[in-house]
Structures are given as C-alpha cells and as structure tokens.
Length: 162
Image (cartoon, rainbow, N blue to C red; front, side, top):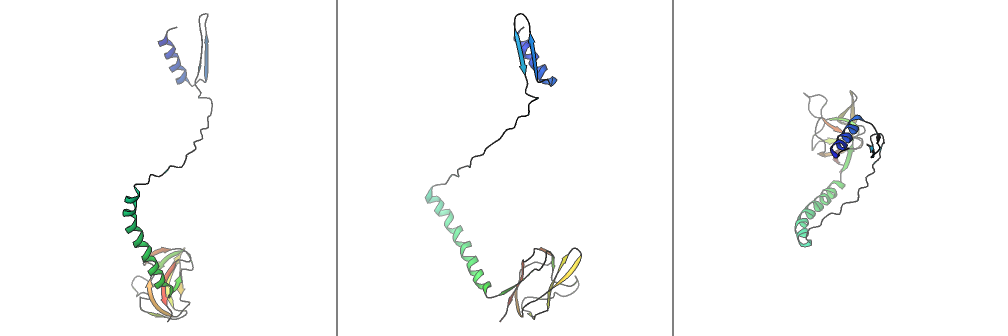
C-alpha cells in the first residue's frame, strides 16, 4: 500500500464518523483512530495577566491631575449635602414630578414643604403612589429627572430643614 492510498484511507475514515478502523494484510497492519467517539473535557486555567506599568515618571505626570480633581469635588459636595435631609424613594418605579403632563409640578427648587405634603408620584405596576414629605423645610435640589426609573431607597430630593 502506498502513502497516497493510506492518506486517502485516513480521510475516508475521518469523514465516515468511525472511531477506529483496523486493516491487516500479510505485509502490513494499519490502525486508524479518529477520536470522534470520545468526549474530551478541556479545562483551561487562566493565569492573571501582569499589567505593564509605564515609566514611573510618566505615570506620575499622567495620574496626578486626574486623581486630584475628582477626589476634591465629591468631598466638597458631600460636606454641602450633609446639612440637608434626603427624601428617598419608598418603592421601585417611575418618578413623576407632576400629577399629569398638563399640570404644574408638585414641588420646585425653593418651595417650602411641610410634613405630609405630596412631593412626587412613583408609578409601580400601573399604580400611582404619592410620595409625601416626612420633614418640613425648603427643597434645595431635585436629584431625579422627570419620568426616570428609580430604585428603592434612591435619593429624590434634598431638603434644608432650617
């Protein structure tokens, strides 16, 4: 048997779907195994990739301005907001500032609210739930856009109680 015939036999066995073929004659013995019948499980372990750190002088130049600006801004904002009381969402739903599209908003920035005043509506499952203020004070900031989705306990308004 010539090499070309053996190659053709291997191709034929692979296409036929047989797992193993043995061919024996007086002069030679050939066994062809394809491995199609075996289910092999391959487990790949990925090792953590080391990050390449650029030259230290270059990293400092690039990172210093970026790191300083955001770090100072949240501190200032947080200190300003600490003196205010937050009205939070009691449920998950869609936040609406007005009772209907053609009506005025319940509250605007600068409005005074009292305990029990309706500040917004949150729609959940086709039910419109009025959110009432639990504190008296002045609306300082509205934190959510009209008709936006809100999560449970998400801040909606900042109120200055003084």
